[in-house]
Amino acid sequence: MHRYLILVLLIACVILPACSMRRQGIREVTLRSGGMGPNHTVNNYSVTFRRDGTAEMVSGTISSTDDEAGTRPTSPDANSGTVQNADIYKRARFSTDRFERLAATLDNNGFFSKDEYGGIVMDAWQSLSVVTMTGEKTVQTLGRDDPQIKTMIEAIDSLRDELQWEAVNR
Image (cartoon, rainbow, N blue to C red; front, side):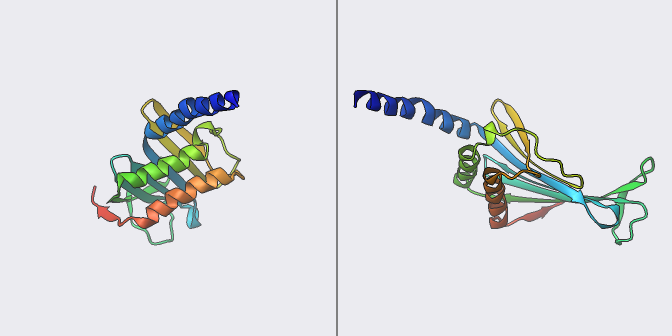
């Protein structure tokens, strides 16, 4: 019984605070994704949540110069035959408690122990990046059959869908 009590105290004093410290060290969470669309367009999207309760979402497309979709290009690249269409920027605010719940979801689902590389997907990409006080880690999320990564992505999508986004001119 004495050994069991010591083991429980050791877990409570060493392991649990370490998880909490790592979670508290998370400063920013970003989900980036994109893929090939019709007419050789490339769609890009990112959403970032910060510990201070600010969020930013950016989306845009890159099209070939023979695009038939009717988009209005803003910066042609003469060397590649592509144009960068104007990105759309949005911002929102949310409670810092909500950020803590998101950080807890990432930490509890093993984000920091995940391998950085996912499976091979040729026409799409998605990555999850976390900035801490000590650096940044990015995990490729597509091409995996990992329920923990799915839970993390669902938490990010849920928070994104809850917020009231406002367009920002840049």
